[in-house]
Image (cartoon, rainbow, N blue to C red):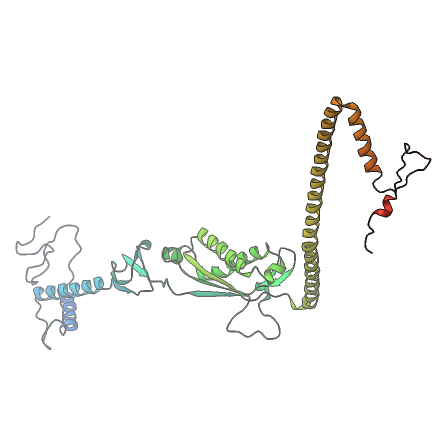
Length: 375
């Protein structure tokens, strides 16, 4: 291969840009015609002369040094603009999700941030504090005339096989701990909230009876629905946080409202009867318990009395028996007298002395001598 002139550049051009094409190194692309190159440089100089202080008018001088400096300045300006395009701002209610070559790389906090310019890195900035809401069974911006409009959403089957209308609202926001999941894991995360909410609410309603749903279980239903929704969304890695589930007043379908009222009245009558029975029960049971305690105490007292009397009789008998062994005749006579005294204490008595003489029987009217009780 023939070498070019020593004053030529590596591409076969002279250092001043003049002369014809020389022998360049093998494998390099051929040099374009000089006239075309001069025309391109002239147009570039005219386009940027105002920016870089070029003179007004005049023909192109044809110097490769001037044109090279211009291209370098243009390239530097484009590089600066390209690098500056990576500056971005994240507001206080937002987070910056930075992608490197389309893959999640990091999360940027609020404030001024920087990422490598496109196509190396890109950024998406979702709001993580704004509260969104999804309405199920109703729409706050629409007035329902001529009956309910969203029955398919709100009609649900209860645990006791009744039908109830459930209208509710779900409040949600992007999870501040995983905004990248919200952006990339689910195709339509906002559109997924509604079917998840319906599914969770139907599951909870199916575990409760109609009476509880209409009266006391509404706060419990809302809390259970919120927990089930959060578990389902977490299993999908949706990056969504459920804030609250708000129920409007549940109701029964209009075609059965009269029958339902009859049932409610019957339930109220049943409650009244149960209350009366409960009151009677509360009255009679304590009384019966009191009587039973009284009877037990009386029986216990009678038992103690009988046992004490028996023990006293035994002690008295033993004492008499001991005296009897010492003086049998005296003791026998004493027992006889005490027995007759006890037996005849309420009878009229006549005392006859068989030892009296002269054939006259002394008579002593003891009953008449006793003082009469005042009437």
